[in-house]
Length: 253
Ligand code: APR
Image (tube, rainbow, N blue to C red; front, side, top):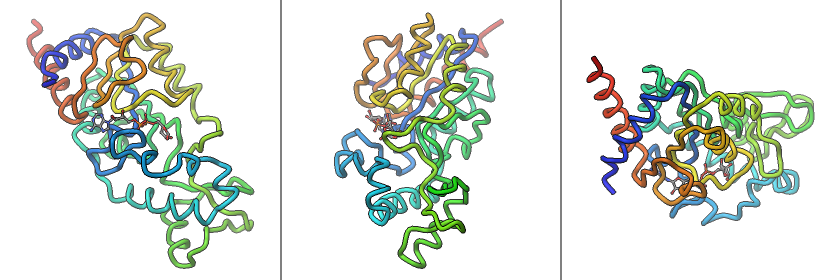
């Protein structure tokens, strides 16, 4: 699919919406070199998803730190790709009001998006599992690489990444749902839409009578509900939607 026609349709809906949000998943960052979870090269095709569980952290903090420190360290050098940059530009144009993301890589903010709601937390900080104190991930990583031991807080508790693990409540969900309730369009980019409750967010927009656009390389759980589906790489698809949106706006009297 060259996504050209779909990009025009998506742009028409976007330009004519009054309050649109983007909802993104790991697929928006694969073009920045960060593997997703359930795509062809996804993490959960190579590792047991229980490694993202809080029980794993509690049962084997060493194994947990070995797994996550590598993934989060790679995020430190990742750069925003065309998809992140296009979403930031759509926000500057007033066409996207917020990005709600399941990602913890910080690339939407790095690309210039101002309103970003990270419902699965952030890889940029760690949190003490005993007293809850936070610290920069880079400091904890330095300690981990120097000692080979999971880093500890001054209270003696072990630090853990400040991300939502399986079995834990998502963060800023209320804020994200408020955005969805006021939206008349949800633009899903790079998510299989299989993890709840996050996946309810774009669904709420559709159930509220809004439009649902999906940009994803593979079919998603909500394709049959979507007004537009673009099975194209996120960077190329969003650049097309941005280009078409500008063309529509410039052609207005
Ligand atoms: N362009 C478009 N789509 C892409 C691209 C790309 N360049 N790369 C991958 N995809 C698609 C994949 O086909 C896949 O369907 O992105 C989707 C990513 O889905 P998942 O890997 O399931 O990621 P996500 O939906 O974000 O997972 C949700 O699961 O493990 C938890 O906490 C983790 O936040 C994550 C949550």
